[in-house]
Structure formats: structure tokens, C-alpha cells
Image (cartoon, rainbow, N blue to C red; front, top):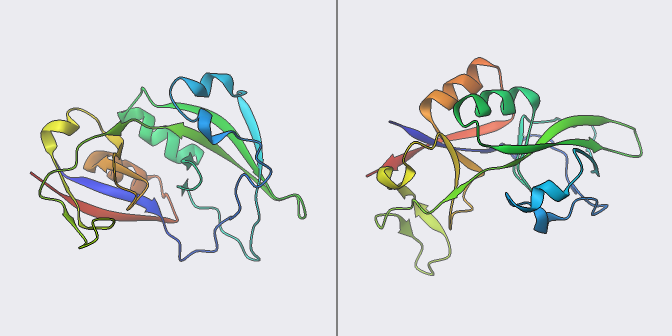
Length: 173
């Protein structure tokens, strides 16, 4: 099976300063802590002129559009999520996203190549056995991208016309 890294395409004029009002306590973004958050949250942001709302936002937390969360939960139904309204107070522009808690797997292979300092991943290689049946996951120790997904999930996202994302194939052993 093939796996891909999926991230936010930073070449677009994406929302920034998300959660500048600190309405969302990022320490609670765990499987246990998310239950303490309200069902819907209003988070302030800044939006550049001619701003673009991608279907996946990776920072400061994983936010998915409705199309994105529907596709992902078809393949990984145990993903926990809460509704979020991103709101730009000056213009009143807003968009609905879903704050997603995605399992983090320790699935990096020892064949992964790092920079001489060891702080940057040059060539990511995943261990297929450690991934198991997971279709969508985060990679422990890797901040190269937002999430990793199986080929069928990526195809489903593309069929739904998801925009503003980057996709990069990952090597497996």
C-alpha cells in the first residue's frame, strides 16, 4: 500500500494568526482533553487580502473542512473532532472547520535520513508494520507535514475537489 504526506500549501494566501485570541487551549488537544472543549468553538484569525481557505490547515492545530473530515472519517472512523468557526473580526469573514485529533504513530523507520545536526528529516521512510490498519495518522517525531494517509484516502480527497493541500509520497519498508 502507498502512503502520502498531506500538508497545507503555504504558497496560497492562507489565514494566519489562528487562535490569536487564545480561545482554544492547545494543551487540551488530546483524545482525553478534547471532551472538555465545547462542541463548537469560535477562533479568531487574520486573513490577507484575497485570502484563501484551504481544506486542511496544519497550524496551530489540525483543522479540516467539511469535505475533508467526511472523507477522512470514512476510512478512519475513530477520529475525534469538534466544530470550529474561524472568524476575522474586522471584515466578519468566517469559515467552518473541524478540529481533528488524529492518532500519532511511532512508525518512522531506522532508514529515515536526517541532517548532520539530526534536527531535520531529509528522507522520510516509514515502517509499514508499525502503521498497521491505520488509514490516517500523524508521524511521531516528524513535523515535515501535517498528516499521513493511505492512497485510498488521498484519492477520496482528490475526488471531492479538496484544495490548498500538498501531497508527497512516502517510502515504506
